[in-house]
Length: 389
Image (tube, rainbow, N blue to C red; front, side, top):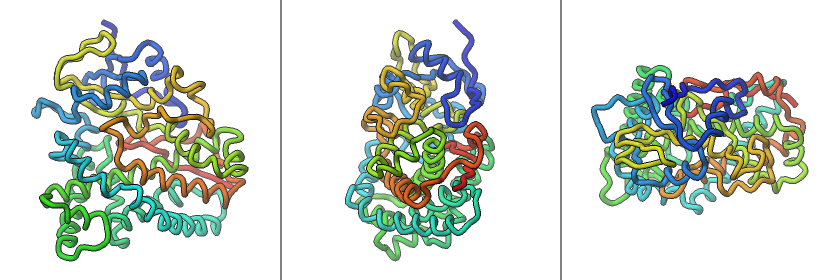
């Protein structure tokens, strides 16, 4: 048996698939790898297998051996999911009503208002400006506060806690961030029980039969997932479009391409390469393309490699805002499709539409090859996004 490939893969360009991952993917659908923590895992890279296994009950988010040591990414997810790690159906049933098309449509004017205000502030600054700091960090936290019912004056505090919780390079810092986040959410839930409002947390509290611990877990999960992921995606979405000649201009000439541009850049977005993919554990023995996976084995479903599968996407390393991205796995698949996808898409669509209209001459202030990914966080994203106009 060949020596397992070592994670993370070296990534010389923040906006491109790591060469090592590309080479591995070309050799088959599943590979033995060694994680950054030193354990071994199966890395699945082929689109058809990743899609199938994302919705396969032979894999679980939680390790069937509770005594087993968790990798850093799985530990963060386990801390957020709590009992929902083994009750995904109940998790979806509790969350889906709060992400209904009607509720997302009602939220959109607020997203547009906040985005417009942030772009007013951006226009008043002298370029170059770090767009991550000016927009990507600022918008999602305000949107999450308004939607969930978190006081805006607390946004900086819980924003810091979610960033600490997502830190996969410092387990102690991650635990502390999770602890602070849960402590804050506990008080928030108690406030909503006493004085409910027209917000997601109050509506979750009103769900028949739900316990305080479940509300607490859902609140922390929503704060974390809705904030960190959108911050990362706004930055890489804009960077990818600015790095590909002609794409920003195409959007300005035809604003109707914005929705397609969002989907294409999501397909191309690079999560933290240190995590390797979506973590799962085999709950029984089964085969992946002739390779036997044993119960308890750690399995990483690499959606980025899958979204660069040339049998599904022609010339997958090139941004094309007119591409058909219906087969993209960026938000998962089937029963494990991300319930918050519409909220993320709403923010990205508003950001792109307003940015292109207000800043048609926007461009990177550094070479695309100089952009860097955040390696110490579960979600990834860019460290900075210097732009000028």
